[in-house]
Each structure stands twice: as structure tokens, then as C-alpha cells.
Length: 286
Image (tube, rainbow, N blue to C red; front, side, top):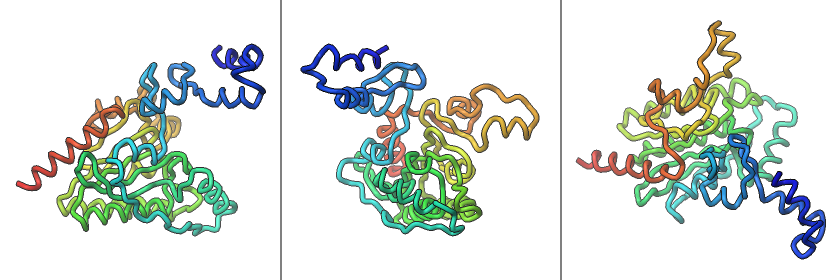
């Protein structure tokens, strides 16, 4: 309804819209919420931390937006931003696809790692980005996250990982699956050093990422109504030969069954992370 009205603007208001190109530009400023189906003004959604102001749906966001929302301005220092592409299987078209995504997203890979401050509390961060091959974990993603965990151990700092992923990257075969063991081993060393780890699960967190580092945080948070799981419902039903409860892979269901510790809305995420870091810091200094 709203879209139809916008398309008519160039017919009734030549002073506002001069031609079809301008009309299309105006339409591009709107987005439809896939939960409540409301047509929303993009700028209003961005100002609301990319959360639907009508129903509270948490839209997926880029790693850059996430970092800007969480980290104190001017404190984020990125690590390993130029790690080279790996194509261990020489998978046809893989390198070209990566290069096209790098051009489109202005990212080198599906995760950004670095050190920053949250209300003055220093932490290592790894922020995955679903815009880059759905946040899938290949050798570079696994290496960057492993390095971030190791750097947290070396500097004796807490680590916060924002997870969003479709799982292991099939174009790298067994190499991508090996990242599960590598990141897990790094986490074990972090835990042995008595350092804090916080994993934040966002929509979606699935596959090998869920089965490795995403599930290993000392504290596991999640955004509302995030899809979290390993395999899809159909695959699980075929395996266990049972009908699964509705919504069993939602963050709300997983909170109820003890898999995660707390659901945190995006507007509260920075404050909650700060409280966790501050509590850990004060306890560590005793």
C-alpha cells in the first residue's frame, strides 16, 4: 500500500520527484519488516539500532555497525585486517566470489577482530558479519578468531565474540571443519588462564560455529528471537525420528532450557557487557 503510494509521487508532485529514477531512489529508502510486515523508513530503523520500532524484530547488522554500537568511539584497533585469501581445494569460482564480496562489503573476510573499550573497560573483540558468505567459517575466519583468543590470553584481557554464521564453509572442505578444533583448543587455554569469555549469539548462529567456540563462553548471551542451532529442523527430525517442539531453535527456547544465560535487547547490549566486564575486573583485582 505504502509502496504504491510512493510510486505515484512522480505523477502528483513534479516538484518532489522529477522522474522514474528519483522515484526508485525514494522507494530504496524503505524496508519491509519480515516479522510484522510493516513498511519502515530505513533511517528510522538505523536510528533505532536496526530494530523494528513496530514489533521489536532485531534485523541483522554488519560488523561495522555492531562495533560502532558496542565499542567506545575511537578506541577500536583492528587486528589481522589483511589476512590473505585461502583456497585449499582450488574450488572453482571461490576466489572470484571472495573478491567480489570484498569489493561489495569493503571487508576482507566474515569476521573483524581487534581490541577496544566498552565504557572504558578494555576487551578483545571478534565480530562476525553475515553479509560476507553468511558468516561462514573458513580457514581465515578460524585463524582470525583463534588469534583473537590467543591475544586475549597473552594480554590477560576478556574476549567478547559476536556470532552470526551459517556454519563451516563448504568451499574449503575438511580445512573449514578443522577450525572447530583449533578455536576450541584456543578457548581451553583461555579458560585455563582464568580469563573471561563472553559469546553473543545473534540471528542466525548455526552449524560448526555453534558446535565450537560459540558454545564455549563463560557467559552466553543472545539477541531476542535469534535462530540458534546446529542442523536444520528437517535434518534433526529425520535423524531422531521425532516431532520437534515449535521454536526449539529460538533464543527464548534455549534460555528456558539452560543453553544460554540471558537474552539481551540490542539497546541494552553495551550496558550489559560493561556490567559483566566491570564485575569480572573488580573480582580479578581482589
